[in-house]
Each structure stands twice: as C-alpha cells, then as structure tokens.
Image 1 (cartoon, rainbow, N blue to C red):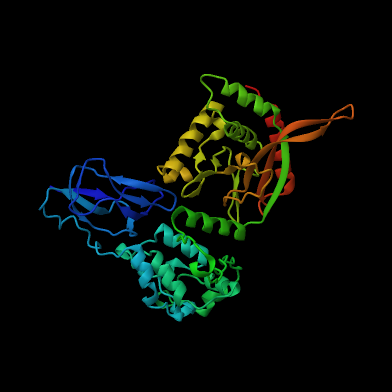
Image 2 (image 1 turned 45 degrees about the vertical axis):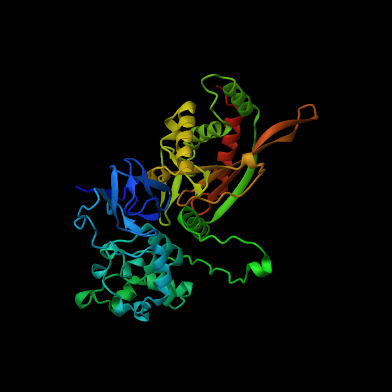
Length: 450
C-alpha cells in the first residue's frame, strides 16, 4: 500500500506552509528520510523527509502552493500502484506563482462591499485564512472576513487579498475607519444592517487602521544602470517588513541611550573563556542573564500594549534577535528570570542554531515579553531598535568603547563602556521608568561576579 507524505505541522500556531520547491519528481526512487521538498512557514523554512523508501508515485501540489498542514502532498510506493484514493480533491490547485500571474484577470471586488446594507454575512464566508493572506490583509488594511476564499475548502489565500486590493477603490484613513466600524450583523431581517445599527456603532470612535505606503514607482534597467539583481520579497523577509512597518505605525516609539561600565562583564567573559567547562558563555549570554534578572523589577517594560489595556508579566520571556540567511528571527527563552547563566547560554545557542539552520519550531518564535538585539559585533555605538509589538520595550546592545571618566582627584581615566539603547512604547509607559531600567542595568552589569 502506498505511503502518504503529509504536510507537517511545524508548531501549533502554523496553519499552512508554502512549498518552496520539490527536490524529487514523479518516478524518482527515494530512501527513507531523504528530503523530498522544502516548505516555508511565515517564520522559517524546513525540509519534508520521506516517511518510507520507494518510488514517488505522485506529487499533488506544485512549487509555490500554500498547503494546509496535515494534507497529503505526495505518495510513495511501488511503481504501478493505484493512488487515486490518496490524491486530494484540490490537487489541481495552482502554484502561488500562477496565482499571482492570474490575479490580474480575477473578478474585481464589487464596490458594494463599501455600503453597509450590501455587506455579506460572515456565515457564508471562507473557512479560514492563510498566514500569508492574514499578514498582507493586515498590512494593507483589508477586512479578510468579507472575502470569498479560492484556496482549499474555501480558505482565503494571498491571491484573494491581492484581487481585493486590485479591485478596491482607494480609501482615505477616515473612510477606512468608518468601514471598520460597521457591525458584522445588523438588527434587520436576516441580519441586515440598518441605519440605527450604524448610529449605535458610531457612538464609539473606531480605531484607524494603519495604511502601508504605496511602493515607489521607479524605472531601472540593465541597459542604463548595469548589472543588477532583482529578488521577490517573500517568506521571513516579507513578514519582518510587515511587522516593522506595523510597529512603527501603531506605537509611539522613543529611544534613549546610555553606556555601562564593561570592566566586570569583560572580566567575566575572560574567566569563562579560560574555563574548561564554561568556555561557551559569551558577552551576549551575560547580558541576557543581566536583563532577565533586572527586568523582573520593571513590570512596566515587561509587558504588552494592546491599545485598550496593558498586560504586565511576572516572569520574563526573553526574545533575542538572530540574524539568519532568511532574515531576522526572534526566538524566545521561556522563564529566563528563573534560569542560571549556564542555562540561558545553552538555550540561546540551541535556539540561535535552529533559527540559522531553518529548523526552529515556530512556537519558539512567539510569546516573548521583552527583546534584546545586539549590534555590538558590528561596531555600532548606538542605534534605534524597533519594537517587537505588542512588547513595550526592546534593548539594543552596542559595542564596547573606551569612555573618559572623571576621577575623584580631577583626572580623567579611560574605562571600557558598553552602549545600551532602549526603545519603549510611550503609549504604555514614560521615560522615567525606562530611564530607571537603564540605570539598574548599568549597576547590574558593573557588579557582575561569578
């Protein structure tokens, strides 16, 4: 009997994966564990291994297809076996590339979606939305709940949002806010939205949905500008771009800079480097440990800003930025305030390596309450980190530089200092708590002893 190849579930939060590319084709002979294809979530890229040895009897989805998890994507068995029972009904789904190319001919979204009494009921809508479609809809201010999905089982996928954008007349921020304020169901017959429903709803000001700026229109060619490389933005890079833009549009970000005496942390690093069993502890690990121990005393910064409420956490779930070939990722060290330095160091290495290798569990990239990002190795002396919303704060680590310090006798001494840059959401907290946190970090780093 033929063996199913399922789209794996990479974390509980992942609903679907994009097939980046197949490494095999129908008729190929494969060994158990051999990589069949590469798939991508909105956070990372993974390989799908062969669950059994045999012949590839069928490949049911093309490169670029957005496939729900646990769907059968291929079949392995003995040449000549009947696999009709394994073939999904939607196996003819076109690849993502063909979706994009045909989106221009897709029916335009009728303007009636902008009028209250013609808005469809959600009960007749799609059965879900893919992560890529949700990200695009959020970035462009599209209400995905009113879209009809063309994906498997009526799922709203990226091309549906693109089609809506192509057919939708431009809206001003005020108009979009009014549209967002409309109720989903009205008090009329069959849920029809009446004028009285709109009046009641409008009594509460609707939030203004941030709008992504239009991409600049430019002209370029190899004939006039020489050799160039054009890359379609997708995957992790596309997610990072959308989140950074959303962060800047929805939060009041303020950055403050200071520096901390680095003699103790440099001495600790040397001590561990010379140690046979703790040589792997880095300066970044030491700072992560210091942040976790200090942040518990500053709940204003170990928090989420959710617009109408502030959620403060007793424990520190510490995110740290990792530079990968696919873009920036932020894995989370859970309950970092309860871990020893050695435990934080080991966890940071495990998570960082998984991000770089593309094997990170997507669930390990969510749930952080505060983030640390380090540009010290690049020689950066100060910078402006961008908040990882809805987190209230993010700490940037900078390079260690000699700083002149006045001595008691009036002389000047050059002491190595590490730059610290904190960005915080001024909607959630003020400069004084952030300043006190920086002061506490200076004391913690200056007094590190192991």
